Every structure is written in C-alpha cells, then in structure tokens.
Length: 523
Image (cartoon, rainbow, N blue to C red; front, side, top):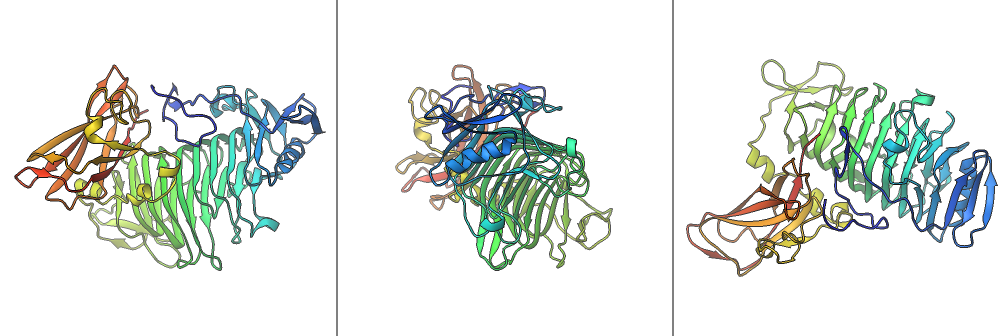
C-alpha cells in the first residue's frame, strides 16, 4: 500500500487487509506511545511507573489493582496507561474513566500474534478468574447516571472472559466516543463462562469505532438498549473485522438488541465491514424486540452459522453484502411484529416450497410460523434505495474515516496532485465526489476517474455510487466501475460514468454530488 500511514494517535480507519497470514488479515501496529503511566511485571508482582517522573509509585500482586491505580490517577485529567508485554492476572475488573486510554504493547503484532489459539505471552495477555466477567468496565452500578467520553482500549488479549463492558442493562448510560482496536478474548479456560457474556458488551453508547476484535469460545459483540424512562437514540458507529468462533449455541455471536420504548430509544446508523461468525449459535442478530434497529449496512459478511443473519421484530432499512449467499431469517418479536422493508440482501431469504418467504415465530428456532409473500427488487433499485443515511449523517463514517471530497474533473487529470488523482490516491473506503457547477456534460456517457488504494493488487474493488444532491438538473444518472490497476501508483483506477439522457449537452448550474463507497470481497 502506498501513502502516508496515519498516526497512532488518530482514530482513523486504516487500510483494510494490509497484510495476510493465511486467510486472516494482520495489522502492523505501533509498539510505542507517549504514556502517563507505564505498567509492567517482573513475573511475580505488577508495577505502575509514572511516565513523567520515572518513579514507580505502586505495586501489587493483583494486576487489576495496579492498573486501577494508574487509571484513577488520571481521572479528570486524561492520559494513557501503557501496559508492557506480559501476562497479567486480574482479581477484579478495572473501571475506566473518561479520556483515559489503555494501550497494550503490541510490538508490531496483531492479536493473533499476541494470543493465538493458546493465548501466548508475546504481547499483553490478561487472565481472568471465573468470578470476573470482563477485564474492563465503564459505568454501570453506582455510575449508572454518569456519561463517559473518549474511552479507548487497544492491543489487549483476555483469557477466561470478556474484554470490556460499557454501560449496562437497567438504563445505565454508556460512552461516546469509544475506540476499540486489536482486541481478543478466549473463553475456553473458564468455559462456559455464562452464555450471555459478550467479549465487547456495549449499552447506550454512540460513536463507537471497533476494529479487529476476535473471540474464541464466546460471542464477540452486543450493542444494546433498554431505555424506557430515559430517551436517546444510539449508534452512529463503525465496526471493521470483528470475528466470533464457537460461541455457545444459545446466544447470537453478534447481537444488536433494542428493547426499550420505541418512542424513546433505538439503534441506528451502524456500519459493519467484513464481520465473520464461525460455528456455534446464530451468526448475527438485528433484534428489534420492542424498539427499532434501522439503517444498518453490512459489507463483506461471512456467516457460517445456522441461522446466519436474523432480522427480528422492529428492524428496517438494512443492506447486506455477503461473501456467499447465506440465508437470511426473518422472525417475529414477542409482540408479533415482523421486519419491514426496505431490506436488501445479496444472498437469499428462507423460502417454503411454494416460494413464500418464511417468517419465524419469536424464538427464531422452529420451522413453523406465519409466511408472507415478498419479492426481491431489481438490483438497480436496491442500489438506489440503499440506506445511505448510515454514511451521510454526521457519524463515524465521516468523523472517524476522514471522508474526503474528490473533484472528479481534477482527479481525472494525471499528475494533478488533487485528492483522488493518480499521484494522491484515496485512502478510505468512502468519499464524497462532485462534478462542479459549470461543467458541460455531453449526451450519453461522460467518464471521470479517481484512484484508490482501497483494494489489493489482485482483487478488484467494487465501487457503488449514491446520489446526494444536484441530480434534479436535467435527466442525469450515475454508475461506477473499476477500470484498471495502475502499477505506477500501485492503486486502482475507478471510473465514474455520469450519464446524460437529455439528448443534448448540459452545463451544470449546481454541483453534482454523490457518495462513492469502494469495497472488495476476498479471502
């Protein structure tokens, strides 16, 4: 990949699939950060060293007590607690505060290098007793009515339970924003440690960015709300490369759960890029039990479960792109509500022999239940009606991905240096693109180009364009396609065809704006 790598201090989306080991991507992470406190171990005790003075201020035989000391010293101030490579035995959970970041020493390793199948000790490995469900918690309990912000946890492997719980059931507030990167949980040493323990369990939170989070022997992610007396909508979040393996059969591997008052709360504006669930339990549930789950976009999914993707109850405006045509299951909630359109899916629904889509009863396990007639819309209709609000609303897609604007008349010019040109390619999967006012479009196809790093050399990207504004000028349309691989910039050339159907030349009186999402599917 070309281009400048973003700083470790910037919560930006880095390039997906930079390096591969077998089938699994490995991100190369920085091994040093500026730290307020440094926690380390000599094998028998744990120590907290002041990063400014160099003085060792505290030590204990319980690693959680030492990390809690460092975190508490930064309460109300903010800073980073850097944990040196080693094995850390916890006797309790560590409570995190706003603006306190906990970062493990990665030494250029991914969580697979750190933990692997047997939870080795190349990086930071936290061992939990069966009495502790999560290594870190934010809010809940006596802090139920407190809100938290700027929570960050990176480069940690947990053995024996979950990684972090933010907020909680019982209408306890969570946090915003939240950054979670390069995390792993193995549940096997305490298995089964409660089927309802999620590695990352997030309640009542906004602006969450999660990247490269893996579990083995337990479910990976829950996003939940049960607000009935309080009011707020939750979501505006992006998750990349989350994977769950061999979770208990009684629990979804990934679960978006909305069980509050429909007039007061919901989960919305969620983006999942290449989520994977492998064996054990349902794959991915969007669960509108009593309040809404809506505007959800899932790209490059791999659900090797039965069922794979479940849409239950008050769920709507969902777009799913999957590696293989895994089935989607529609279910009633306990009130008898079934998911509503639009739902766009490039796999297949579960059909009866007479061609009617099955809608299952509330448990989503039996084959009986009400059926409804439905047909899949044409592909061009699906693309035009995709719930693009997930990307255009001020959300992590814009705040965390640093979505840039590409002037297609400039990016088409070789060597111009403008964002999107061959000597300054796009570095993110989503961009806003414009054809500026004053541009004349000839009848038929008018082709513009931009260049992107967002795909490896031998796997062509799939660009999709969504109209934003300015399309009321004459009879105009748009389509996108990958054109060629440019070996000079080591990037892909993307063609954007603006189609003028009016039969005569059109000079734009306003900018013609669109959102272009570039993704690829590969092993």
